Image (cartoon, rainbow, N blue to C red; front, side, top):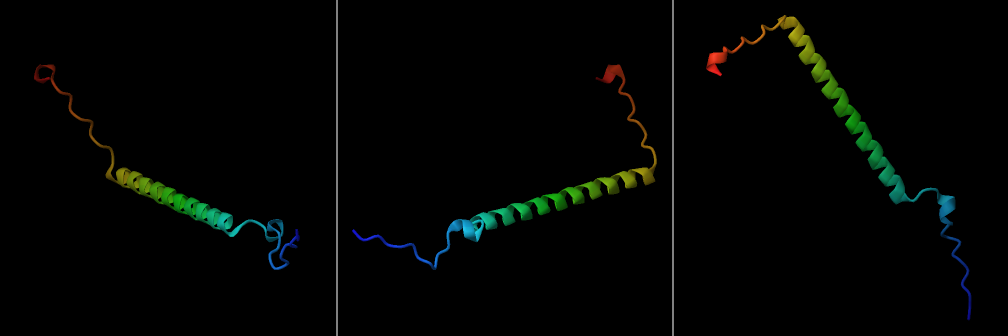
Length: 71
């Protein structure tokens, strides 16, 4: 039985680093993380804008108490 030598054209996996599928998956995770961070920053900015608008409007009157007879 004849043995076949491994092809010299295909380097061992350890020499090529992570597979392209793993690299693509890592890139997708990194992009998703960047998008989540952008969404978080946008939400925080909206909260700050609402708080600033409320501060400009001044104090809000408390709701009137409901008489016990109308409950």
